[in-house]
Length: 306
Length: 305
Image 1 (cartoon, helix red, strand yellow):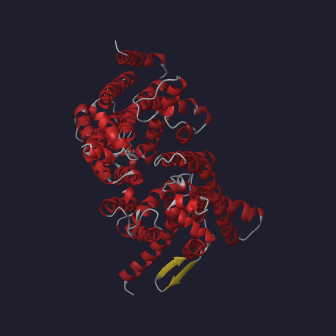
Image 2 (spheres, each protein chain N blue to C red):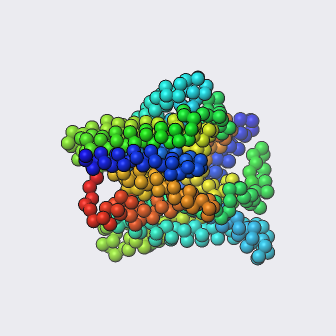
């Protein structure tokens, strides 16, 4: 068995055992949240880490996934899975719309355009009350499976599948193409790489994955309000990717796990949740630019390769 | 005067008043971008900190401890907010911009300042709680009436302070040696260094000036905003829109764009409702980015687009 297969088997075993190690309903809820965050971190990492596009609007796609799936189920009585499929498609399409900006803009300009994109999405959710119920929110959203353990297995299973899929993708020539765009777009173009096309691919796929995570969020919390998809959510996703180590597969997963559990452990000290995110983000950028993964590799004395 | 004309004039005045407040914030962002090619995402949180500093200067220090009349206390609060802003600028330069500059990365400083922003907001949340503070300016109580147009003494004060700040900044940049050196650093950091100018010092100075403006902006904005730890977040997104519409690093463009956004906001409130302000401003931003990414007044920064 290759190291990769061993890692996969271990991951499956850990996911299988976790709900029985953490049996309190509260911690089982945190596990579901963690699986969702892993999905979101993977989705942002594809755009930020592998393609090198600073996207501050990822929360918008998470929101679209949540709203489209919930509205189709509650208002139009769709089946959850059909609604999720539509929601993922909608998020992916919106990702392509943002990619249209990414084709023309770079660096700081793209960062602010994507931020504007997230603000507009949030404002539409607040103001389009006929469809979204605005700030009043949508109540009584049911999860696709009854038990918290079932929901965890479902989301974690999907996260694992997405991980394997993206892991294979970034090790394929497609991954090389995306990295080439990240390193130097002009050189990439000189090698015949169509930057616009591949950026659209990365944004679309990243958005679809975030939308997929969004499908499970409303059922998990039971209600759906625009504030759950504030800009700050984009920043927390970014913190997970950067703290873990962007541009590596395992890094964002570690970042998501650390930044989901760490604030919970500090909960006794008051409103520390987001302070931890802010502090972690700043300190890692300053002192550990490759995140936990790079720090680990340096400590373990191994060579750096993505 | 017809009703419509009176309405248009009234809303234009409201818009210019708002616009001046935005200019105070956006100008700092543009100044920093001009010399450093960097965005300080925590800039608007300096506005919030400035607003809180001003609030406590008025309610505690000024009126209680020093026994000043409230108008004098408010004027004093603008000075403390200015000082607090300058201190924050010094700190963020030392902690984030100076260490990261040597690595020459484009996006890391932005990400680090996003972290600082999240940290500052939640630190203030811990300190002050989520309930909004009622920050009244004594000048808001004085209403001035000309014909059918009304405005408060506060809006006159805001416009005057902004105008003086902008004029002082302009004079500093244009006529002093330091200002000239600053423009030289903005144009070409290395060559300026060869001419015996210390770029590090001037970059620090720029960040301090920009942050001081943001802090004072907080004292002026405090009475307008719902003063919570997240007050700055509502201004920062608009400031980014203004800076982009005006052209990054372009001071003139930023001033025009700031006033423009203020006026657009006033008319949006009048005709579409206050809920749609951000939507209108950001659709304008995205249109601008696609149609004319160099801003209203085109400059050299083509390579970033």
